[in-house]
Length: 90
Image (cartoon, rainbow, N blue to C red):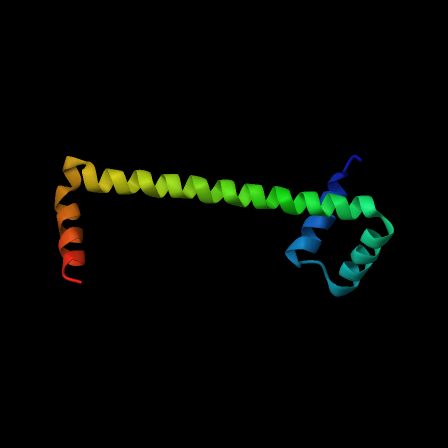
């Protein structure tokens, strides 16, 4: 069940919606005729989901690190106080 680079690109194009209508219909027909292709597409969806979740986790970590630096580092005390005052008025 080896997946070729062209097949991976086709699956990506189909999943992203960048495939023209005719090719998308042909791809859907191929998935019906070749259950292995449908299986590969499902695994590619799962891979995309994992990659997306990993990216979100990394972004959250970066945002938290910036937050910690801005609100705990002595050189940012003035900024921190301004932000706290701004939100204390709400």
